[in-house]
Length: 226
Figure 1 (tube, rainbow, N blue to C red):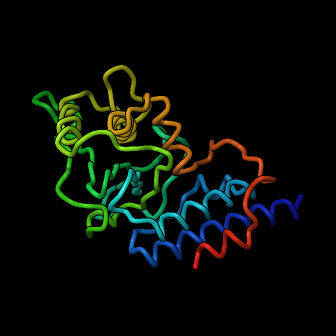
Figure 2 (figure 1 turned 180 degrees about the vertical axis):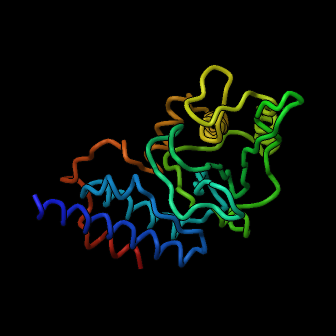
């Protein structure tokens, strides 16, 4: 029992060390992901290392990236931790970058004090100082089929929708369901497919198991880090 617990903690530390080193090299903000630490199986850590290798070497001006940032719990800075669970219920703020341009949902209050989806932030790119307040995850296997003008119009079209931070339903949105809708529109996926693609890209406590027998050897994986 103790040996198994020690192995779990050791694997969790390996994944977090790769994440910290990746943030040091890319300039992104590091936070402690409780979900990642709790899901420290060999398969989950293997997937996390592959994600960090991709993020370290890929051209961020191309393709689709999903950004996560720890939440603000009072004060001027985000918390030092978040909880990756699954898209839509992560304890993180989420944004999306499409071909280098960031689309970030904001909130506002209407005349009755009800919180709603506000005008999105679209005036910075993924490698800007503001962009680096997120940690970015590459969404593999998708192709952007919309123009920048179409994407901007879509992002603005959600303004005024009811906002619900926890388990939105119907017309309600939170930042993560907003990103899911943007990904679906940008690539032609269904929203279910977009949610699955984001989950595969970011991981989380509820990420499914993976058979490692067909995975590339760890030596080749670590070689890709350099």
